[in-house]
Image 1 (tube, rainbow, N blue to C red):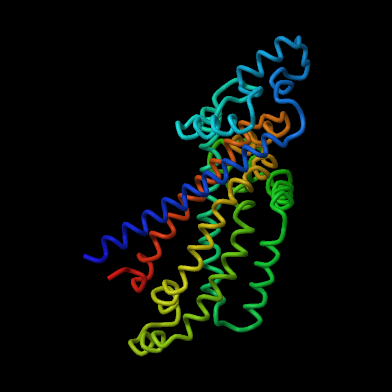
Image 2 (cartoon, rainbow, N blue to C red; image 1 turned 180 degrees about the horizontal axis):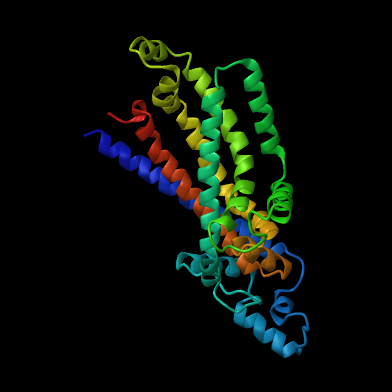
Length: 313
């Protein structure tokens, strides 16, 4: 009887936090639109910018640029509540449609990079946690280098070696599995370095717990204890950090998609920033905030699944 009200309160708090994050992201995006230098009417008119004052005034009235900032903000929030992200200044198309057209390749790249990063992090941490100090030190140095190396530099090196020199993978495009390998590795390596270090610390702490001695006394080997018991106890910090880092994958995809010439949100944002097409930029910012909210909610729901001690009674 007491679990239902607690669950309802938790759900209300989670929804309230999600709404606050989205409203905050929308507000910051709107302020960025107001503070950006230049006249939005000039951006709409394009490079020629040839229009009479009357035409410029009509465009300003049509898009609401002549209204007070407070009214523009309320209209902006009202459109967002209806799911309307506005219209691109340059392409004269709904922003939601533009993002939907480019979302597939970016989601494919982000998911591939996340899965690869988790697999590599688990393999590295399980193989080195509690082992010889020299092995652990080598793994830590490698992970530190991976985490601190800029992704665009990694992408250029991978292209130079595996595409230009050995011709194993295509240089650009998004056709087939081969075109996904190098971009996914480029985006996954920095995540792998961070996740592996966090997971190793959790594993080493778990291997010091009394349940390890109990499991070994039942005949389980070292590897089995790590995979069946210690890994589960140390998975929550890994899961939480992976959820936080997932939101950064869209930002990382901007650089990676540019380096590898892939279609996706990255190329769309690059074009929008170059052309000062702020409705598109704002739409991508709000998409990133929404992804962050969804991932955080999923991570919270998975915590009690992984660790039964967190389940309400």
